[in-house]
Length: 307
Image 1 (cartoon, rainbow, N blue to C red):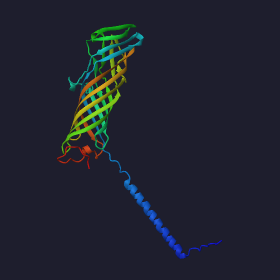
Image 2 (cartoon, rainbow, N blue to C red; image 1 turned 90 degrees about the vertical axis):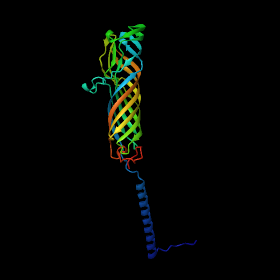
Image 3 (cartoon, helix red, strand yellow; image 1 turned 180 degrees about the horizontal axis):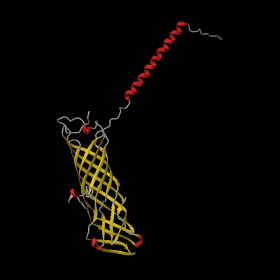
Image 4 (cartoon, rainbow, N blue to C red; image 1 turned 45 degrees about the vertical axis):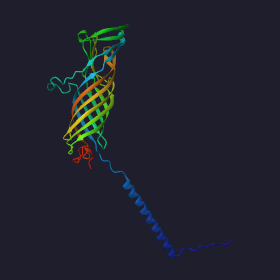
């Protein structure tokens, strides 16, 4: 068998080996530095805030669909429906508006936040203080059980005969909306622009229930009384960038349940068509808001983000 022996490296070869290792180490450091620099350049930039708040106050008028009022007073042997009752609103703002508290008439408020870069999407708290009053002096059909006996007859509803049914301190629709804004026109300096907004949402109803059912009064008061859902479109005219006037129409569907009546509960559901006129203000969250940035070019009518 042939044995092989290896001579140790001499000094010159050792130095050359160290030089090669040093060069490799330098190349490795440069590679790591290059990767780190590239990662830093590719890292996401700090997010720029573009949000804006808005709030408004206004007054409304509405029209209601006919509805069935279902009354249950178990201890009295009553479980009947008043069929297709007619109801009206009670505006309050069309008489002596400046001589009463501004929360007495039918009012509404909106509080929202535009959250995206284009400032055309928002979340909104939408509240309508609407009044629902069963029309006095009307004939309706009553069907079901009253005083433990079957009943199917026409009855006359009037306050003079001891019957009224009010959600007069509010049928009170509360909605949590998603909002979409579409810009229609703006001047180059952005001090005047016109928008169209669409809204959709769902939320609870918070009625103030007051009634006298055939001479028997309830303990009136506010309560959580069901839920509602609504769709709204509005035309908004903004002046001097911050203030606006808004005219809106809205449809709402509400289901009321467990409403307090004397020794029992009532439920009903109805649709509403509503007209609303409001004044409001826009409040930018940061200077980067595109609605409050630099002026547009003279030939432009679109709202473009600030540079």
